[in-house]
Amino acid sequence: MTDKKNLENIKKLREITGVGFSDCKLAIAENNGDIEKSIEYLRKKGIAKASKKMSRVAAEGLALLNEKEGNVSVIEINSETDFVAKNKDFISFCKEVSEINFKNKSNLDLLKSSKMKNGKTVEENLITLISKIGEKITIRRSKYLDNKGLNFAYVHNSLEKNIGKVAAIVQLSKNSKKDLKEIGSKLAMHVAAQAPIAIDENGIKKEVLDKELEIIKEELKNSGKKADMVEKISNGKIKKFISDNTLLNQVWIMDTKMKVSQVIEQHSDGEKIKILDFVRFKVGEGID
Image (tube, rainbow, N blue to C red; front, side, top):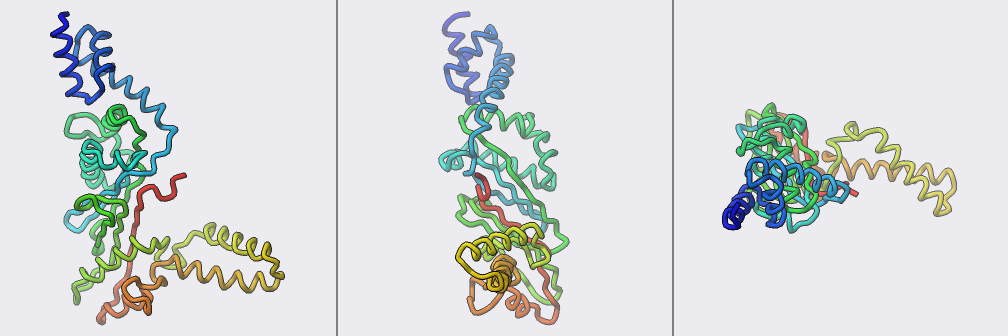
């Protein structure tokens, strides 16, 4: 094969795969100029590269919302650096994956095996992207809220519409007497800012409360408090923990003299509004 033909094939392979010159040159040489075999060769090499990167921490990235006909999905896709989170190839991949995630109602197993526009699966495209960009990229978590209630979404630190670093959705019961768009949107902003872990005390897992109580008591003992005082003070502290972390009991960000429950009561207008569900994804939160 002539040097000119070699260079043409290397250029074509780079355009198709986005992989660097030296890797494409090696692939062409190893596969006697066959483009299809070279693509397969690079994909296999990409898998090897990706597996080495999987031990690294990916705590940057994007949270993406998708909304249609009252249904909403949210997905978090992580990269190692914020630089990559702003990369056009990464963003393009995330947008298409977000659309597929919406169609699959946030079933991540189904998502990974779903075909993208180029005919390859999400998982195959993920591996190719890792190989091209050179960072660990993970599809971390997702959630889908259907239109059984009214869904209101908010994105903080938005890169563009429905894409940012913090995404929140609040689902309210339907109300025939009142337009809930304003209060729903404000509640989504509140969730994004205040990070509640449950709607009310019943939604907090027992193990979370037990662990928090254990930490509180240990801190009090270490500060020299007597046993009876430890018990008394810890009861007060755990009540404050519940209040600070449950949406209905949190102080309303728009008016610190009110709690969220009081604001909802104000807007009920004779037909009680209920918070049915909420979700908040902050990129990288909880990743060690």
